[in-house]
Each structure stands twice: as C-alpha cells, then as structure tokens.
Length: 167
Image 1 (cartoon, rainbow, N blue to C red):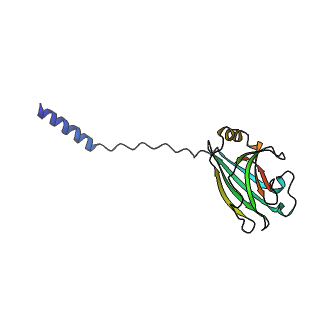
Image 2: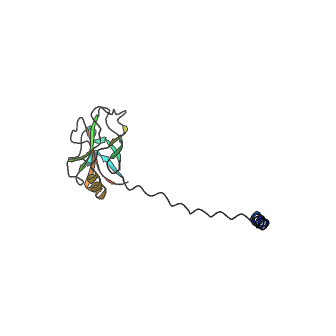
Image 3: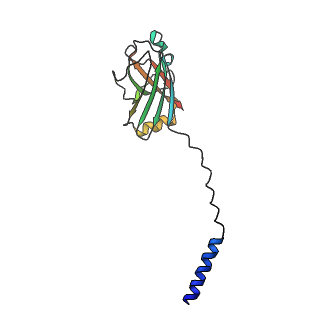
C-alpha cells in the first residue's frame, strides 16, 4: 500500500512539474480617484463686500479653499494686491447670499497679529477643529448661501469676500 501511495505522489509531482505555470489573473483596472466632495472655494474680492470697498484697499483680492470634514473646516488662503499698510485681522464663513451680509457661522481661527503681509500678500492655512457637523452639512448642501470674508484693520466689517462654490 505504501508503495502505491509513493508512486501516486511521484506521478502527481511529476505531472505538476511538467505543466506550464498558470497565468496570473490580471488585476482589474483601477478606478480613477474619486473627486473630493468636501472642498469648496471662494474668489475673494473687495468689490464683493457690501458695501464694496472703494479706498486704497479696493486692490486686495485672493482665494480661499475650504476643506470640510465632519467636524472641521480647513482654510487655505492666499491674499494679494493689498497696500503695504493693510493688516488682515480675522476671517470667517458667514451665512448670506451674494450682496447680503450675514452672521458668522465658522471662524477661521485667524486672530489679529497672526499674519503679516509682505509686499501686500500672504498665504496661510488655519483649521477650525470644532465646527458644528450640522452646519457643515448645510454649507456643503448650499455653498452659494455662504461666503468667506476677511477683515482688515481699516475695514472691520470685511475687506475681501467671496461666495463659496464647489472646487
């Protein structure tokens, strides 16, 4: 019986050695990376303020990219074109349609003295890690109903503003 088992094992081994290796199964083609559903942008302009800025700081402009998680809002901001004397103090997301002033909903955490413009420009990031999840959901569902606003020392009500839109 042992002899028969040994012969059978040898035959199986010999058959396995002589057969070509199985071709690897091709991997499925990877899907393109999903678009990020939680990134929004605002084109910041002095002319978007209500009322529009008409003095020397009317040359200020910029962009804000806001990335939401379930409980945070990350602000990636670039401001340019401001006079050398401009001081940007604070910034927020407000509720309000274009041309309509509204209350602060999410603070950027930027405080007076945190940043200094160089040649009228600055780029910075701030994250508010304590944002209300229900508010984030509301903003993501209707970004045009909210705007990003940055305030200067001269224009304490806001110097540049832009409505949120899908990035």
